[in-house]
Length: 567
Image 1 (cartoon, rainbow, N blue to C red):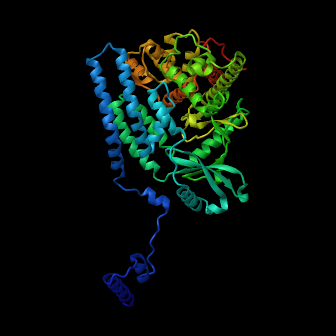
Image 2: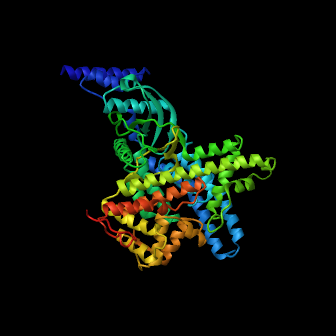
Image 3: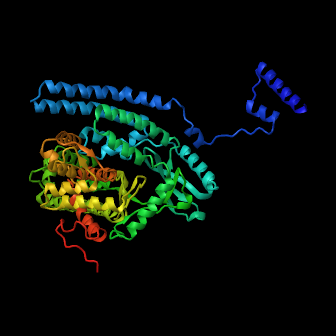
């Protein structure tokens, strides 16, 4: 009875205060009336995860408000050219170029506004100079390292709560400081940080996940899948596989263990002294916090750009002009089936009159510097392909998202491989089946029947079992886009649509999707570095070694090798 009177008195006092305009706190009033009441104060992470239930709809409306008119514009233009100007290739090309130039900046604006999944997709697109129009590649390339970061105070708040919740320690005990932003992307943000002496005092990279990223990705996938159904038919199965894999990125504990495994595998490989993978600090990692060794260096593409600028007297704009022109030539298939010029000859063509004042001695010196630069770039790209080939065919564990921002040239000269959020694992059966396909593709005189047989052994199945068409699918997935370019198809997507019109591929094994994606990303990186890659040529030796050591002699006769004896 006494307690009831106390509650009633307190409530009446609060009511009187409200009537008189006196400020009061409902929370403090309730606690005062009944000290047993405990009101849980939600953390920053909990508050952001408990987002507005209308947010998915709001994001979908924002997306379609900008993207819808673009899709309509493209569809109308496509329809128009089916009935008019069908034979005027020049006019069609000019129209499409103008359309791409008009809509690419809008696409970037949508990505930067919505962030999340759209940043990830934009990064992938920007690394495929031979997959999407160059206007989009140029505009989206800023997504590799120029996404506006979240405020450092917000990041420190997430780190503080994560350390307190998962490790029971304060941020001041672990870090002397959390400094510059190293990268801001779709799921999280990476900072350079300094550990306290208690934790070794080293410089580390701290990767922090945005609390609501997982919910945003899940809902954004639904929106993007609807776009694919309207504008990119045939992509839905691939997008489903991408969703299954990317939705595994939302636990940095997993990524830390992936790093640990890949690092251990690389230490046992022939590339241990040439490639570095950062070491994670497992004890400090949690679901939304990853602390790892800091690798000091530059992105591979940036290091080549800087080196070319040095050769050109420090002119960075001219260096970018040269590299972009070469990239455009690859995109437009000018290098396919033609005798290649020397890089210095191409440089002279691009620079024009700016190069006329050079003496023969200076031209010769620059030519030697350019030859050295291109040779070094090819070596680094070849090393990257070999290290990845070893991971796929020997270890069965590899990075399913090797976009250009994840590949560094370290200060020590080695390659640095970072970001293993999308680590893929191949079972032995799938690894050897893939090896059979790549070994046949890379063989000089392999027949369409041999390649298509290896594809069917892997699990590919087409409607009509057309050997020639299946062999072309194999080349597109695991080797090069060059044949499609020779046939006049501007992008791999258009070439794939053509192949599906001849004999549609009815079944594609899941393990093939991400290996093919890795192959596509490397080809895009090759285009950014002015090289046309054939991934099966680089990977064949690794495939043959896998078949020889793990294949128990199977299929080796078909590859022209002598089976390994059991002795």
